[in-house]
Image (tube, rainbow, N blue to C red):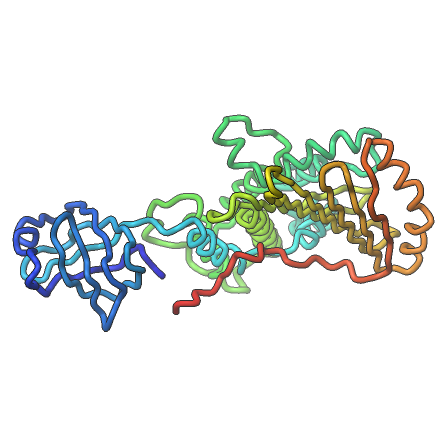
Length: 389
């Protein structure tokens, strides 16, 4: 159901009192109304104040839906525009539709960033020194896997993965190591250097402006560049811009997927990706944390589930799932490589001892060889399809 911009026309006076309202309408006036019926053959029964009317519209609303209306046109056929805000789920679905086509997996970005940071062998084809330095600084801020304080830094890195960026901005507590902020800063550095942008980048710039700055776009957009006009450095910057924008869209997808469901406060899911630096390469930890609260008689039981996907050399892809209820934990580990699965199985006793040393009771502890791919990146309740279309 698309609410913003929908028009309602009031052409049909009825036996119910409505003439006084129609005569008093003024352009720009804000009215509060209620739909008294569903849409039937292009008309709905509408109540505004104490006045009941039959209105023409393509709007589909359930009976009892409250509507905020603005008068756009008066006269014999007054027109009203619906201003009622969409629901949280509708806003989430709309935002996801915009960012999903733009998102790109982060490994591709890190491969390109590594190339930009280290390649100085081709004069005239390397990025400007300021961009190269900014890329090097960004990569150096990624948490290293072999650092002694990795566990302590890991907790901080989770908070700086980009999923809490806007909350930090609201509190004016932006961290220098915030991953999303650093991506945005690098994009801001590259934008002025792209003097003639292809259509794809023009569209991306317009999309970013729509998401982060609701003001109207400039009247004249940059002219597309032909392949002959684009230098190797410009092509590299354009590709870097595309990868950076795709990474930000990826973070936004995780942020939107982590918003609580409006109709179920007992369930919450958080998901985010954490880049990890090991030696000269970069890997990702993909986290999905779920909380579920259920009533059991007079008691409330809260269960936590954590799924971690990672691929570290030489172990290969792995998936770890933890389930915690009260003080009881269950753990299952899948490894795609047979040698890794055997290695994990041999160390399960050490893992059990480590868990029990924290005061937890181990219910189940298993290791298998199996697929470790990432599944269900969107919450199961989130639909991108309008079933009423």
